[in-house]
Amino acid sequence: MALQQKQFYTIEDIYSLPDGHRAELIDGQIYNMAPPSTTHQRLVFRLSSIIDNYIQQKNGICEVFISPFAVFLNEDDRNYVEPDISIICDKNKLDDRGCHGAPDWIIEVTSPSDPQRDYGIKLFKYRTAGVREYWIVNPLKKTVMVYDFEKNLFSNQYNFGDDIPVCIYNDFIINVSKLI
Image 1: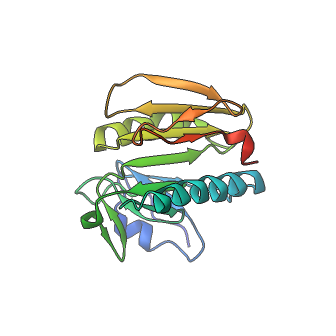
Image 2: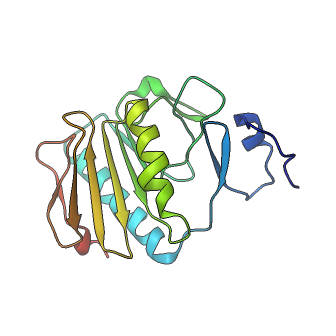
């Protein structure tokens, strides 16, 4: 079923898509999502597992959610995203539909078909919505861009073999090369 061409779409349009059709809605524009690769899935699973294990060991309050998981970034009907990994520390943001407001930490694993969405559009949306930390994991380049929006607006680029400090936790380091 094709969507009628509109200038702006809403979350209602996202929910009316056929079963199995995945898309995100950013500022009223629909962005279709390609099926993830094996490497993409492996990275998402292993990163989410190591983060969840850390939180559990520390008796933390945050929860880890993997895509498909709805994040309603703004209090409007024109923004709906499904980050690869969302870490949410405020239980009041959660309900059966997903997360209402900015997750504390978002990780996106880039897709070869559209990496610029993660580096441009989503970077801006996540920062302005109040995400505290944002990682862009690029399996082709074997790099991780880390944005610490809570402490500063600068980014750091790491290679998969580097020990990457997690900004929202003082004593948590991830080495991506050990996960693949």
